[in-house]
Length: 147
Image (cartoon, rainbow, N blue to C red):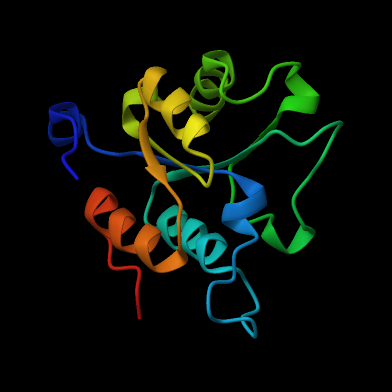
């Protein structure tokens, strides 16, 4: 996959992950304590990237308490009143991270939401499997993520 030139100029500074279908995907490791992409969020956050969950969850929803140190921001459609793929929700997630949308990578299992993020200026990654998403994130984030 080719990536926009602005990634080379500005650098990725944020990782925004969908909850259902992405952060709930354990891949082949059903015995893992953390889903692989939640562990990735923790790793890249320790390396200085900002991290967020962006979910179309209804009402006020929060991630499990043990994920408190993995994410800087949680944005849910139930909280803000609009949902993916509305461009406003991606822009709000970037704003709450204190980042320009162009410096954020967004991962979702629904192609329509990935297209929405790209239309808002983010780099979109369509999550089809843990392995393929990790491979793509390694390239985008320039961080080794697979053991």
